[in-house]
Structure formats: structure tokens, C-alpha cells
Image (tube, rainbow, N blue to C red; front, side, top):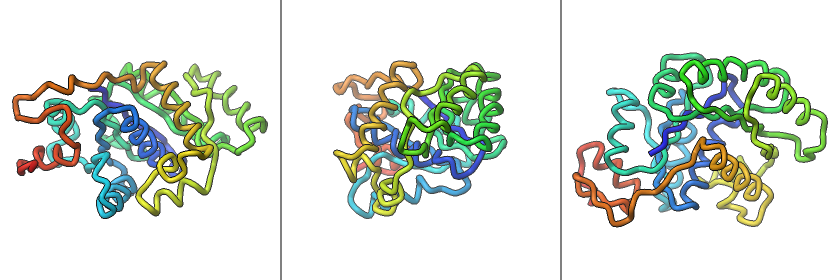
Length: 245
């Protein structure tokens, strides 16, 4: 199992949107994925509630347990989840450190503007202090990737020593429309530009080893009776001590 903390020190960067989209990319590749929504504005959890109302139970989204993120992570590890994405708060809080403590890697989401880029350095420092493999994805970029803002952002991040995804995710009205329907752009518009960009970001994360995960053997049955094919929404019931039937 791989745990990745998604970081952004400024609000409005698209961090939570990135979490949802990458979770769906993981589902598309056959992974069993869980989101832990530790952001004070639980947009991922509200999105999951919309999906549930529409009959789409995956990916599972949970809020931090009173027992702590570490306890939750261990529960899901025993249940053979492949990937956990932690949507962290946008400010320096103990929750960010707690998430990084249990993470294998970190991903920083930033817009290609000076205000956001100034805050990336601190996210990189915190992740580096805990020796976490870290990458950066430019989000909400101008649709025309040739504009100077994107190239300047890459130069700035390169000077910080950051590993930057070669694909910048374009700003698009497809994202808020999809959120309102409990979807992601690649689900709502499978032939759209967002789908192609997100697939490229996912592929880069695999190459960089940031979200490279191997699925458990589908025939494996865990000690608590859950197979690798058990739907993630049933994992939530089991982790709460309730029947998964």
C-alpha cells in the first residue's frame, strides 16, 4: 500500500480537486483507493456524498478518525487498500505533519503564479525534512501552455530543486461542473482535454514512483475475511466495526 499526502499552503490552488481526480485515475487503473479528507473544508467528503446519492460508492472518502490518521492507515493496510490519498489542510498544522508521518510520498499542487509559488518552498521543505519523495503539479494553468506564466513557474520550481510534472493541468469549467454532479472531468467528459491531461499526470506519478502501487492478488483473502475485490465502501463499514454485507 502507498500513502501520499497532497499539499498546498494556499487555499484555492485546486488541491482537493486534484485529490479527487487522481483517486479516479487510480480506480481506472484497477487500484483500491481511499481518500482521507483532512481539509477543514471537506469538499472531497461532500463530493463523495453526492456520488453515494447517485449510486457511485467509490472511491471511499473518510474524515480523520479521533484515534488519528495513523490508526486509520493501519486499518486500511490490513484491508488491502492499494492507495490512500490524504487531502491535507492548506495551513501549517499538526494534521499536515501527522499525514506526512504515515506517508510514503507527497505531492504539491500549485497554480503558476508568484503568490502560490512562494508558498511551495515551505511545502517542499516540510516534506524533505521527513524524507518523503515529492513532486509538484501545476494546476489551473492557462489553457495555452505556451504562455510565459507556465514556463516561468517551471523555472522557479526548478530553482527550488523540485520534480515538476511535465503536464500542467489547464483551468477549465469542466471541473466545477463535474464536482456539482459528484464526478470528475474524466468521468463527465471522457473525450475531453482534462481526461488526457489527468492521464498524463497519473502516468508521470507512476514513473516518478510517487503513486506507483501494485494491486494485491485478487485471490488473496485477509485475516478479517476481506478479499482484494471487496468494494471500498464496505471497508468503511468494517473499519467502523459494522457488517460489510
